[in-house]
Image (cartoon, rainbow, N blue to C red; front, side, top):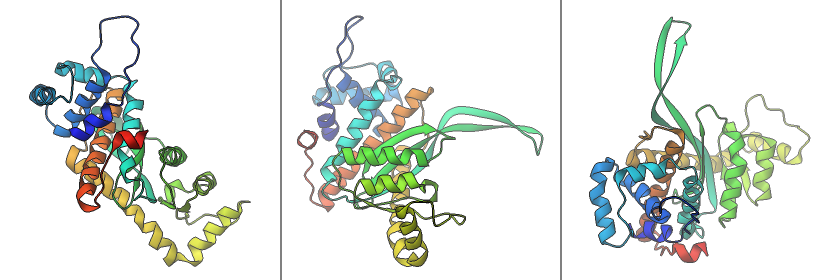
Amino acid sequence: MEFLHQLCSGIEEPIQTNGRPRLPLKDMIFAATYKTYTGISARRFTSDLRDALAKGYISKMPSYNSVFGYFQMESVTPYLKQLIAQSALPLKSIETEFAVDSSGFSTTNYVRWFDVKYGNNEDWHDWIKMHLMCGVKTHVVTSVEISRATANDSPFYKGLLQQTAKAGFTMNEVSADKGYISQKNLQATVDHGAVPFIPFKSNTQPDRGSDLWSKMFFFYNFKREEFLAHYHKRSNVETVFQMIKSKFGEKLRSKNETAQINEALTKVLCHNLCVVIQSMYELNVTPEFCREAA
């Protein structure tokens, strides 16, 4: 609660020109993230909000419906992404090796289609896909994007790189699976000063008019053992998804798409704060979010 309050205290209140006075944005983002952390219903969460109010972490007591309302605001999404990046900053001197992958989070919505082979209708939970980049040592998430279930992974790679570099992290190497292999992704990694450890597909041709492509192709094929020693660090991103889903749940309770995106982002923010707390004892890290952000 203390670290989340420090993060939210840096949020500037947007200018309101008309309408009823709104609840402070920093209080509502605190409440929405804290609700995700507790994992209980909004009505029962009211007692936790009263405790947060008594301790000075929020300035006004919102109703449980107000928390739902802020989950559904598109304007909250960039704030959550910024808080995720800011929460990882205390570990930027430790993390220099990163991994990228995606995973699905199921929703309460259903999709239906007709099975041609067996001639019956099927109902399945719809889901959204989370793309993230994490450090392989502490498992802190440095950048994240949310997409629909059918989105390809490769186009999100460059954006995750740019967000991590913008946050101030020094990247020495980045590992990802075959779904991210492309000439643009390899070049983007090198442009940020890192070595890309992305394996090639079986039908890949060695020459595509790029020296970088050819060098990495022959490195992968003729120094396979050395390549895989770096590539297998990618398994840490699977650990990150397991940590998030096992502690904060793999299902999203929100109904509409915007609320589902914001709920998924709050799960990542809660995960980062837990990682920072763990690093305090294991790595002797002293987090100062406001100073790092400045």
